[in-house]
Every structure is written in structure tokens, then in C-alpha cells.
Length: 171
Ligand code: ADP
Image (cartoon, rainbow, N blue to C red):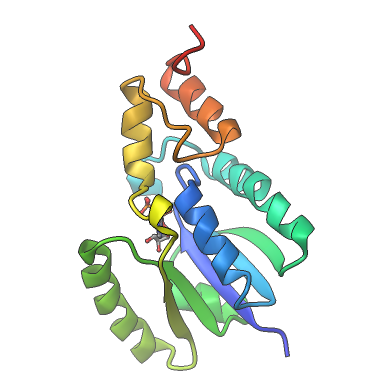
């Protein structure tokens, strides 16, 4: 039986925190479906197509290692419905702070009522990556700070180009 897990997020942009969680999830599932939220109202820095392409690029090294199969897909609407349609038995969520915990504990209860067959699995990133949040990465880049401790070089250069800043140390 194939174990399919869904890992949903906005990935605006994908960070080392996301990638750490993806690496862990790939050890729990045979097939990891990474759901990139359309999030029209959040006004993301990167378009849906850009975020999907960035996640695909970042996941490629994992896929080459052959842990699990990866699929990157857009989604909107109810997460449990997306998970069910993908044939998933697990929803993977990352936990960083007590704020994440408070929000997630409420969500997990409601999702479990809607789809009792789908289990939510919480993972924590390695200590080095726990504090990373896409929102802060975007803010640091806008202010001309160095985001390379938080995202890959490929992503960092895309963020600097988007916010109209030179990468620190290159100008
Ligand atoms: P963010 O909340 O940073 O905008 P997403 O909506 O893309 O990011 O997050 C998708 C999932 O990844 C969520 O479950 C979130 O808690 C998790 N996540 C993001 N960054 C980290 C991190 N540094 N450590 C653990 N989990 C994380």
C-alpha cells in the first residue's frame, strides 16, 4: 500500500525550514504531495506558478536521493478535501512556535471531525531552521539584509530581483 502525505503551505518563498520538514516527511510517506496554496487574498510576493517552480527546484535533490515520490500541486479550498482527493492518509504540518501550536490544535480538531480517516502529523525542523518564516525572509530582503542563511542561493537571488535590491556583497 502506498502511503501518501500532503504537505500544504504558501511557500512564498520556500525556505530551509520547509525543506527540512519535507526531508522528514519523505521518510514517513512513499508519496509526498506538496500543496501550494493559491492564496489570492494574501497577495503573495511570488505568483502561484513561480512558487510551484521554486518548490520543484528545491525538491529535485531529495527526489534524486530516492526517498519518496514527490508531486507539487496548486490547491485552494478545504485542505481535507484536497488531501482526500489525493488519496492521502496524512497531512504534514510544521510547528515552530506556540502561536503555530495554538492555531494548529484548533485546525486539527476541526479537520478530524470532517475527515476522521486523515491523520495530521506535526514535525519540528532542526534547531537551526526552526525560527525561519517566509514572512520574515521577505522583510529582511526588502531591507537589504542577507537571506542566504534561510533560503538557498537560487531562491535568494529571485527574492532580491523581486524586491528590487542587490544581494548584499554584490554591489
Ligand atoms: P509561513 O508560515 O512561513 O508563511 P507556509 O504557510 O508556507 O509558511 O508554511 C507551510 C507549513 O510549513 C506550515 O505547517 C508551517 O508551520 C511550516 N513551516 C514553515 N517554516 C517552518 C520552519 N522553519 N520550521 C517548521 N515548520 C515550518
